[in-house]
Amino acid sequence: MKQTLAQTGKELPLYEQVARDVRGLIEQGTFRAGDRLPSIRQLSQRFSVSINTIMQAYTLLEDQRLVEARPQSGYYVRSRVPEIRGPVFKSKDFLAPTTVTISNVCHQVMCNMMNKALLPLGSAIPHIKNLPVDKLNRIMASEVRRLGEQSVSYQMPPGYERLRVQIARRALVAGISSGPDDILVTSGCVEAVSLALRATCRAGDTIAVESPFYFNFMQMIADLGLKALEIPATPREGISIEALRYAIEQDKISACLVITNFSNPLGSLMPDERKRELVELLASHDIPLIEDDIYGDLTFGNERPTAAKSFDRSDLVIYCSSFSKTIAPGYRVGWAIGGRFQGEMERLKMMMNIATASPSQLAIAEFLANGGYDHHLRSIRKIHARNISQMADAVSRYFPAGTCMTHPSGGFILWVEMPVGTDAMLLYHRALEQGISIVPGPLFSLSNKYGNHIRLSAAQWDERIEQGIESLGRLAHELLPG
Ligand SMILES: Cc1ncc(COP(=O)(O)O)c(C=O)c1O
Image (tube, rainbow, N blue to C red; front, side):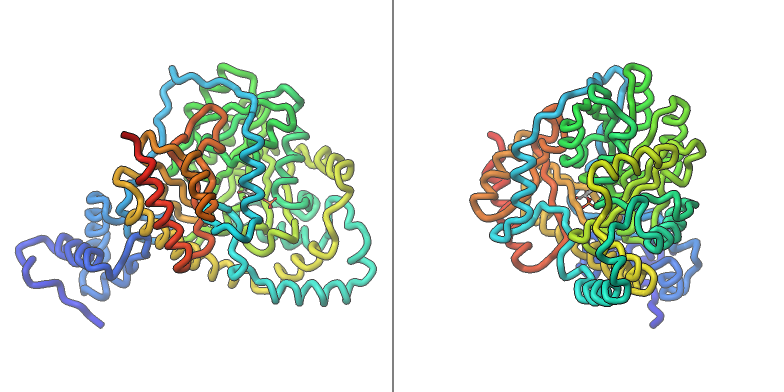
């Protein structure tokens, strides 16, 4: 139905009238933090004004920090909680490689994730309701019946060919041209990254990682006897290319490990131009890039973001991913596109565990070919976008004033920065006493950073989760310094 602009604003330019009306809808709660606003075309039809006018109106609302544009997706209501901007790197900032020492808490946090008695507010595991459980298990049963012997034999590296064909087709969506022979099936993304680290580094080497960074990889780096060099990252742009360039000039770096799309925990989506710069910078120093793109399919927009691998002209990028965040974490199916390290990674894989389990390779190949993967993705993207916005809204209601958080445009993780002095480790322990599990910020660094940060997961949203956020907020208030 057509809508006319409210009368009171006659004296205002048209775009300001539109902006005022949209602002009104936000203030009334018709659109809440994280909600997608009507498209430019829809608004132009609704208000009978030009596309240009609507674009000006949205630009004005963006300037007023009420809405935000998400690439290839549209305009969204900004959260009332301020967005974390991240550090600005200055070359005098000291960057030093560190040996990792966070093992015990990491292990405890991983165990918490499996503890059904705890409310899972921290774990980056997709909610079971958002996985195609029945369909996948039906497919598994019929594929195992159909392929009899193949299902019980080793699918030796590089892995089941039909699966590799499907993965190569899907890689095109991320801008990667590859053939089935370029792909190595692995037991999850973690194994792909582990093989990549082994193929590119030796004990004692330094590996550059973004900071904050996924704690499990920090631990893996330690277990391999490597040192991690933490490079600052921001939620908008990901790893700082300037800081990385500076670090490369100061230190010998053997590889760089980055989560390019909707990183863990920052949720940052590196713009294409930054991905290109990253790949070119590393190539110019002959340093391999290990790219983890496990969250790339979980964009809230319509188009999947590209991979840094798509800019790789030197075969120096090792692309790693899996189906753990989208279809079935327990199937343990991931893959790597190893470029010039492919042969060595295959050899290492065989030495480590011979092959990835066959039934899950057969099932995922069939699911990708005929199971409606794209349809499934569209549905979980919507659910995650809504969950993120509801969780962000709850954090803004229950956490102390001065709390900031990320505004991710994909994935299902929120990174929350509480007022300085709020002890995230203490919050973690107090929350556990109340049956709530979160991931404390210090795990994401080796150098005592993020002491007032926590990672939350919006993999699910319901009344219990909201109550959990309320309790967490209460605890955070109690822990406010002074
Ligand atoms: C960035 C990142 N990579 C890898 C993984 C684990 O992948 P997989 O279960 O496929 O081994 C996770 C899980 O949290 C993750 O966040």
